[in-house]
Length: 155
Image (tube, rainbow, N blue to C red):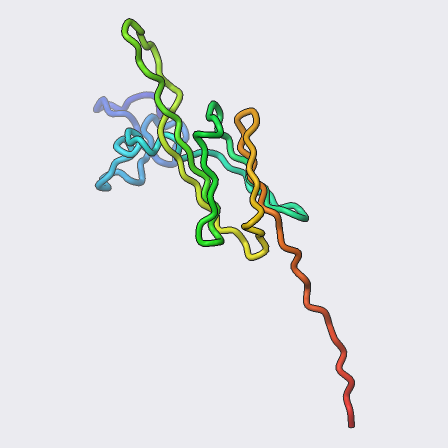
C-alpha cells in the first residue's frame, strides 16, 4: 500500500511501484534540476507535438500550435537539409485591477528541427496554418531506381 506512510512518517518510495507517491527524477542532483528547466522561458513549448508523414509524393509535417498566428510561427530550411519550425507565444499582458486566479496556458519559445531525407525538394516547401495546426509540405524528388542492364558476353 504505497499511499500509507511508513512508521517513520516518510512516504514509501519505489520506482517500480506505480502507486508510489514519490516520482523518481533521473536528473536529481544534476546541475540543472527539472524545476529550474521548467521555469525557463524557452521550456514552455519544448514539447510541441509534430507528426511527420511520408506520402508517395511528399513529406508532410503537422504541428499543433493552438492560438498562434502565422506571424508568430517561422518555417525555415537550413543548410539545404534541415527543416526548422519555431515560434513564440507571448504572455497575456496584465492590466491594472485584474485578478488572476490560474495561469495554465504556456508562453515562451519553441524550436523543432528535422533532418530532411535526400529525396526532399527543399526549394518547393509550402506551409499553411489552419485551426491551430501548422502543415508543412516538402515535395519529394522522383528517385529513379537503378535498372538492370544485360551485358552480352562475347567469346
